[in-house]
Image (cartoon, rainbow, N blue to C red; front, side, top):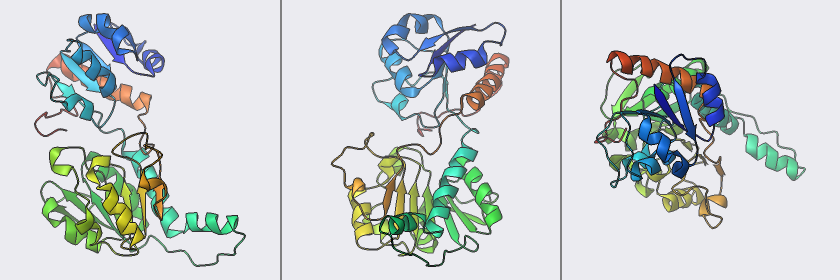
Length: 309
């Protein structure tokens, strides 16, 4: 079976897949150079940006497996949406949880303030705060959100989630619908946004929502940049409506030099580094889905083009 690997890390993916019998691997990261191979490969594995360009060239797979959790480039109106598409699921939970835990602990332990104090040769002996008893709201209580909550649970935090509809979901104490977002942001000591990019999740975090937050609270955005109204977040930080923000994803990436995030008070930009795809985990997911595809079973991470994820 011919497999197209549209990936910057094509060589690594090829090495991981080479031992699989019956697979003929073709690929690279240049969409123009891949057009001929794409035409003869029914199955595509790779980055949405590269595969979107192949679709624009008139190629289309029998099944496409994205190596990203987000598939926004493939949702463009000028692209076909009549083929099976699966996104990366079940492989980002730990790395995303490590990211959230890193910056939540840094906030509680005043890490960045102590770095600044050392640069000024100023003794900072303010006592840190424990995670025990802190209220954490995970907005986007799906696959990745559950993993984040599972990692935080042993620290004794109170865990609430936001999903499309309220429902029981471990390890959250309660999961609310989106209509409860404002009241839950007022409840939380830390808000972690993990929402996907859909028409319903754009510009969610505006001035009104930031005004609900506790002045001691932390906002972490590791979902999608379009969920946040940038100027409203900057203004809220300047007004002291929240204590700090960690921003991993932005509307425009790389973030332009003129953007106010660079100089906003108590805001840290982490350059879309929160949850990198681990090729070994991605290959395991792909091979599982390949077995399912061959046997006609439901694929993991099936995307609804109508929903956008």
